Length: 157
Image (cartoon, rainbow, N blue to C red; front, side, top):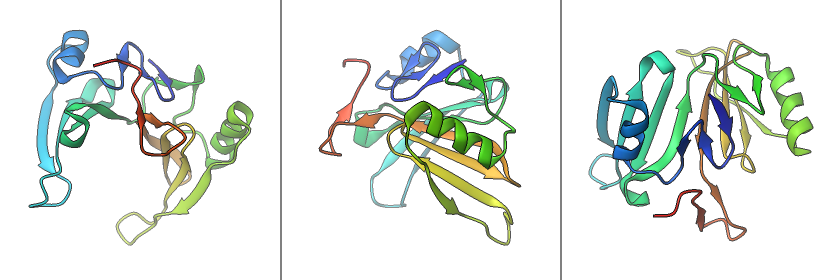
């Protein structure tokens, strides 16, 4: 499926409700429900579609609408190009070609993940995650209006 920044992936759009995603993709392999910080009430549900390398996150703060799509490899494309397994330099170059903007680099390496890096691009609403210099995961989300607070939902409620 093609990832469309700020819109979604394939027929799945930000702002959809859980049942709408299930109607399109069928029953998920797994459903997780948790809090970002225990006791704070910031609950979310995550639908896992493991064979498709996808998860869909619905946050209570977003009225339980789809707000994050995590893509973990596979044949998914961005700007109609296969990008998983590409090196940081190649992905960074593609981002600049498509947006005329440079993504912000962050080193997230630790003892457990010795070469874990990220390119952040707010204009695309995407975090590009690299392990051992190769793209392994994208965390994609909705975009915001110029006030940086108002969500742009591609699907009306």
